Length: 98
Image (cartoon, rainbow, N blue to C red; front, side, top):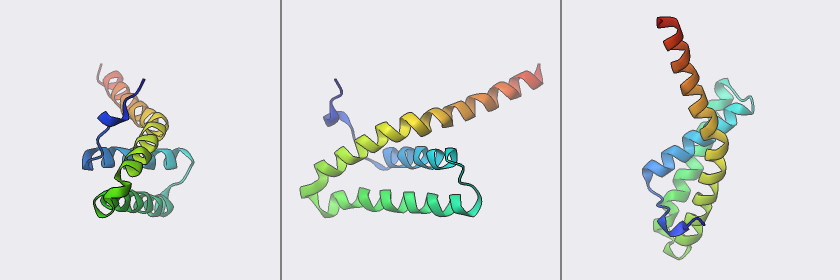
């Protein structure tokens, strides 16, 4: 069973969730300037939500739960694609050098 009390929302977690979220958007075929706009929107909304934890401490636990759910879902989608993209790039480089 996953214990959500060990999940920490910090700038590193925020950056990883944003990166995974942008990768999910890319997987839907968004590219070019629209990808930039979508990335800015995702980053802005998540950064505001992250700071909202300090502004409204009464809702901090709910915001943490939201980040946890988002991190779990997005990382399972975007994280897989991101890791696959990096590992495929390394495999192609190692094949070409041998």
